[in-house]
Length: 180
Length: 146
Length: 93
Image (cartoon, rainbow over all chains, first blue to last red; front, side, top):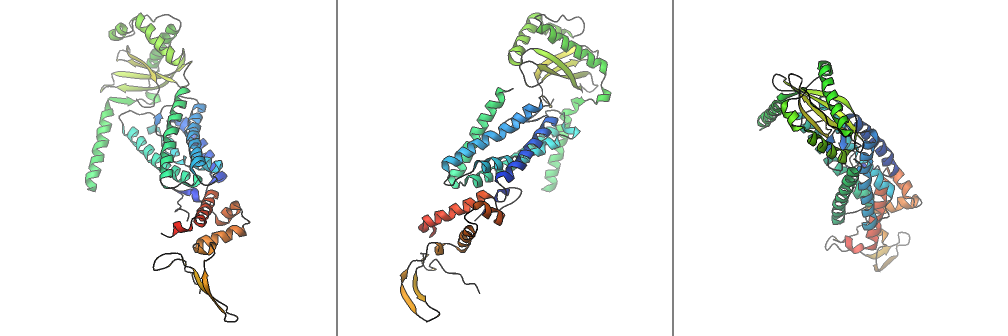
């Protein structure tokens, strides 16, 4: 029986493959463009910085690497652990679409009051709060994306999800530091 | 319970804002361009001289503490460290200004600098006191948070 | 009225087997002990899924379009059914 669907936290019963890849890619480009104009850096899966200090290509590299490493490790987990014949396009598309919640923080930063502020300020705490909420939402989406696109269950699902996240975070951080 | 939570957040909000009363960002229209020019010229001159192997000779444009701290030796050492991490200084541009102090005594001029090895801009921060003397100078990675 | 074919014993929850078959035409009764076909042992929704799969000529892509579900969701469902067919006893509990 398919899991309970919800557009908010599990749209992947209805959307996968190219239907998720194309909107996911458009979403990634929108997030990148907003991140560039507002100086919002996603330095890895769980880190955010506010600095209008780089060219567009740098923000694009951040966005792509944040997605790419997690997609690769999840795909490899699926290939090695799943009994099903999984498709790369399902893993890539659903992981890409999962990143949509990250559009919220840079959108808020387009407001003048959030463009430049003090470290000890309500703006900073508010933005970090919004980012945390987006991160939680993203993780829920990503978990469902992984579960459905790789058809993993129970302990295998949880363990491989955590390991993929950790490995992706390490690779993303190392890669992004190397291009600064 | 609900009024208690509301009071807590109101207190937190007031507290956080009161922490920032000391520093205030200036609107573009309120910025004194002549002061920005002082800061920009100093930073540009300082870094250009260091890049060419020389040292910046202070006259009366800085306060005593700054002049005594940024000796020729120190300037060379600082630039070497900068160069090893970020490459040679290329250019800088004005970003924004903040004022500090109850009577707005200090002007903090934030400039964005380009260096050869870094794909990110650095912040070159110059602080001017009430008499437009240089009272502080930093080079650090740029952040939108002060 | 659509009657559901019982599959599991209400007393001990073991798989039921066929003991008697009846011909409506000539009133012949056949008594023996026969296992239900594997497919008949599956829940009704799984049987419907298999029928739909055959009608879609074995194309998961077409099935996904018809059911308005994603391809991996349909594939996962098929894999679950395959697993039930391969391990019918795992379902008893």
